[in-house]
Image 1 (cartoon, rainbow, N blue to C red):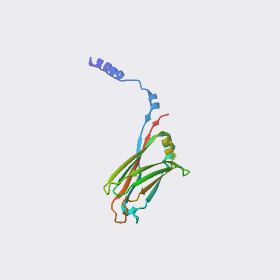
Image 2: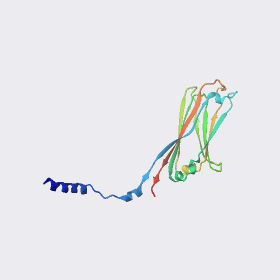
Image 3: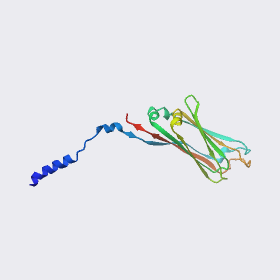
Image 4: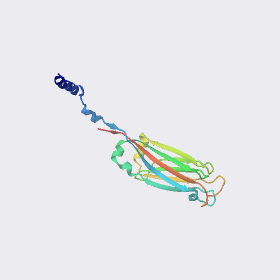
Length: 184
């Protein structure tokens, strides 16, 4: 009797587990990856800003080529970007970091500033996030070069910085890129 029931039971199990498969679901695939990348970083000792009077504005700068936005895949699928900046400093001076973005014609596409306030020679951490969506994202996509201008403002006491001054200022930053990739 087991020989007669076993094939029927096997047939029932095989047919009971079958479900129609919708192969057209592959046409509706949508993924949303997130990519993080280092952007700008520096670490300057106070002696880098030495000035003899304590009353001068001292400026240092750097540039970064951003040719990633020329990539067609990135331009078509990027839906949001965030630039995160963290500045740690222990120099008894006010600083401002100006971030300026340029297009291929060397025209400014966007700029913003991060104010960095002191607490004597105690270490202070300042953070800033700049979000690019909609019209701002389109401006970012036209950017080919980013410039950082770091300005140190005069001392309120008039005490100059020299090669023996203590403290430092350091920045680290990252770009977080949000994509939406649809199968079309």
